[in-house]
Length: 287
Image (cartoon, rainbow, N blue to C red):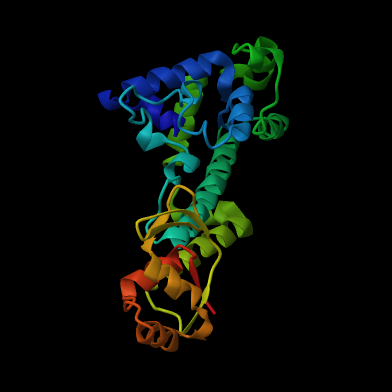
């Protein structure tokens, strides 16, 4: 993906090519791709929710000033599958997480395959794998190249990292899905099958025969409305107190009995869309 971006002539990606080149020259280039800055990762992993999306120093280096992504067509699997909210709630989240795992493993498989095609020494390939978990070093902390490390790791490609990535992109362009399954082996096929299974579940709109209350938190209430936090704090549900009363009545009985009992007690009839939304968010579950 780095090679595709670097060889692109599209002016839309001028900023992305510039920032990518800066990261390469700054020592973030690895044989298996552009490596994350360990200091950035340490802050990212330990920052609380109040800092997420708010701290200016945590902005992605490829983010344009207007908020758009400067490398969007070439972004990583994590960026390509991350959303604040999902179609079909928890089901959508599960599907996209499975797709993320498939793409992340494909990323690794194709990168290693490219190193073989580029005739990179086996020991250097193993060293590249170890660097996927970035470690603090004086050079990394100071955001500069570790000349000794880079000259040893890159060998004939030292100073030609851009050419290396472009050559890898050309090799990767030869691959199709069947070949990827072949070189990915059983593990990759397993992740791909799980993603297909969750895609089938995501397309299934049927209602279960019986219902029970799921796990959620009531985060706010005002003027007869209640906010529920179930699968994702960035995607709360706003429901009426009548809906919350219906949810509380879901105790494992068959769906029709619960609905008829709620209506007989003076509650509103919960339509299919409402029931499906409550199920998708995990507020209700199949009993």
